[in-house]
Length: 235
Length: 395
Image (tube, rainbow over all chains, first blue to last red; front, side, top):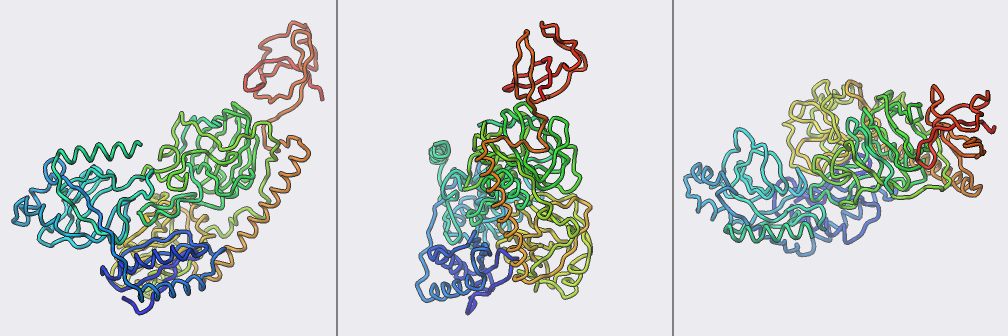
């Protein structure tokens, strides 16, 4: 954690507020708390706030807000946030059907690491993963905290289509694809939940600073949840 | 009200407004007009809210058929527009009649042209915006570029309302002379580059690559060297950020950029210059000059003052048009005149638009006056239906 936030210029309508030097859950929690504090303060002229691992990109309208005043306000809010107790992060459960058609690479991941498929599922689902940020594509969470016991390299040839909701592993990372996309991750399971729905407010089930826990479910539970999710999307 | 039928989609025509803010934290790009000045001006020319949704047309414009009498405005690139085959102006409002066809010959200057319609193009609002993010199939018209058969609505009904089609004064047209010079504020990660890398960046000409799209404009030219690799801990990506990937070549991040990115950003193009780059063609040369944030703010305030001044001008003249209650056809609108027509021996006065003159008499009135020197046969459209008449000019 830096003593005081570092401001980096990012053009004439944005600047970055950096809170620490590396990828660190404490810094990421401070990012979350500062974002909430800025929003609660309701500063005029802010167009958007983009949280990431250790920084917030503040996009502002310079015709409305004065840059140095904005930065002073944010410095003060950050000092205040540091004095207070950090907030308690939210934990979001992601019901996941592991293996089979939903997770065609589960056996490979097991084999690669000298484990049984059941052990891979247990290790993957017993960890809480921090959502450091969302990005890359709408609703895609960058997760931290996966056990190195289930590390697996990417596919040599990416799949043309990965179904929405796929849960995968790539090197030391795990993730879940919110929308259908091509990709090279090893797929170990799938969730029936719609992680991203543009017609829902908020559109994502998880946000920066939340924790995700994958919860193993069976095929019947998957089917029931999938029907629920479809009904919500059309309703 | 349904006002436009897409006959041909063109190269890449999408519905855009000023962008989708508030959702970047969920990884949703801002999108919006690539040249926001063009979009705002098109709307202002019609007296719309300046951020109303409009069509963004790229290089090869679409072919559009109008389903109602209405007014539109074109601003941004000059894609050589034609209304029913007659050349019409960009940076101007124009009156269009039901049944007329707007087409484009191709780019003369620029890449992105904006078409505004009364009250804006009426597609559903998704996460606070009508902008299309085609890669994510979000917003706009079914989340995609327009195709033949698509029907577009306008949010406001202007039938019978006097609207003055306005033209943009010369002084507000974009400065073409300095088109190639992009001013930048250094950072956020200028310190990830060697002193030589920074100097190469600021002193070289770069060529806009073919691999440029709404996400980013890729540039070709001298390599910009990093101190220790191109990767950073991913962070938020501002509009106009000049990201330098591992190959040392810059990509300027545009409207559909990812909300976050993992490459070092050497500088950020200032907001009044982003539109200049958006209007650059593959093969065009650009160069960069560093300015302070204060200078960039000053340029933005100047541009804004011009825009506000013009907006007031339009509002005033619109008020006058409404006060006199008169129709104010623009110089570029289709020929429209009052004629006296003799049909079955009876004289009628019509206000008509001549859509084409028949080479030979297609139909003769029964009055027997068809041979008179002062009359001729023309096709006219009245209330959207086409008739062939023998007419006499009333003056």
